[in-house]
Length: 201
Image (cartoon, rainbow, N blue to C red):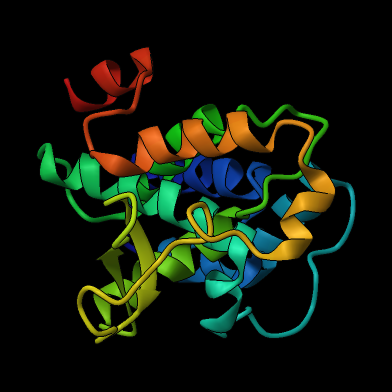
């Protein structure tokens, strides 16, 4: 990082700390910061208390199309799209803010692991930018959901309107959760959170 200012180094370190704290993988950190791999690994160990996971990032699109991940991925991407349409740049900071909104809408506690991890959320944005995935309207509820790119128009039915049989196994609050998800996914303006005002101000 020769020639990089102390302030920039500090900002990139702070960004790396935030990404690691939210579960970001090393490959993601390398892509979004100019910090060395060794420094990122040291930061990861210090924050998470263990070495970073090895192996490739999950680059398959099929995960996003299974019923529950599709709902969560769609909520996140609706938040991201909402922020971009309200004037924020398409960048890692906007992804972080959209992920914050996603966690709020899904009311994920610190004890629970979110269905959609930060690294997958980041990959999803890249997939849409590269025209590998897109948003499609559900023919039943009109919500915007993540689908494969070039999915034929007026042929998609979401897993909230047509849930798989295995979804009933965890139906303690299924109806309530589905109603809340549909409200968020039906229009981009339905992010009921004071965070939105702060983020887009």
